[in-house]
Length: 143
Image (cartoon, rainbow, N blue to C red; front, side, top):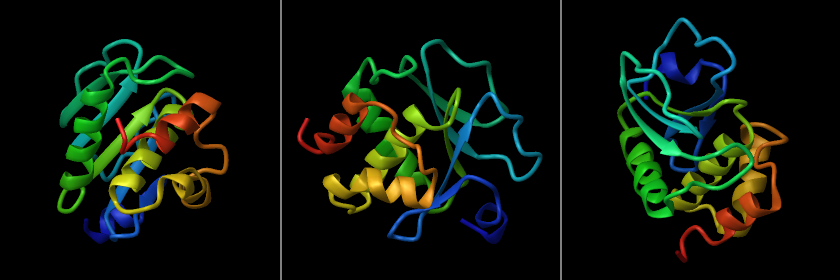
């Protein structure tokens, strides 16, 4: 995406060069730039947004309720990030968001056993909070 997204907080650059913003919804939305597409990882449906968004039912500290739906949404987000501003967010912006970003890193070519470390280095040092979230990333391509 353009320079306006590159300069925003919480942006993760994947090896392919694609940019995605990770965010905790408990924090105020940065005034600019706004996303054009988002994937929200929450236990309950988020409020409507001015941009297109998908909701994945994903309880805090857990895994997505529908893993195929999660794969489809994260694949769509990564594809759309090639020419759109894409945001992935949960309430805190670390566990579920970090897990989703690590799965997207796997889709982008990062080996599954390196994806969590990649996200912790380039997004947040405490991303991906639980052992089962780490296992989900490791097995993301297999399921």
